[in-house]
Length: 147
Image 1 (cartoon, rainbow, N blue to C red):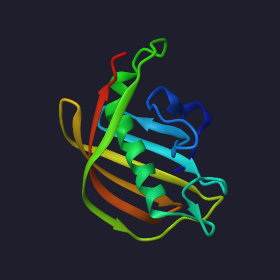
Image 2: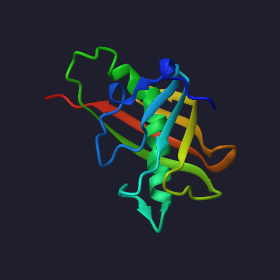
Image 3: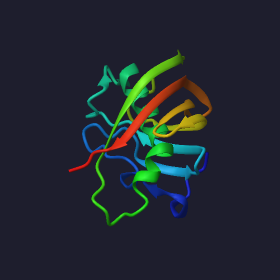
């Protein structure tokens, strides 16, 4: 997928995560049913071991990518100081094929399968170039935290 600067969406507008737990750099495409993110794996990433992003890092990248679909409804007003909390409620199926090396840029794609209020079921995949790294079906729950 070609990354075009004018199409990049700031992920901070859709996720509460910040360094060192932010596992997605940019949203490349976002609709109510689909999201595509990019992430460059840096040597100092907390999930990097022996020059590769560990399985937990790939799963966290998928979860953050998926949560952008549901999370966008909480961050519609960029001026509001909205705080949300989210959880992976289940991973229905997961297939791991390879671990990406540091310096790699990965692209994650997620599609909404179903949603009931703040709970959603999402199919997601992550690629490095054309190589499929991981594929999963994840259930997420997200809610606003009231101050």
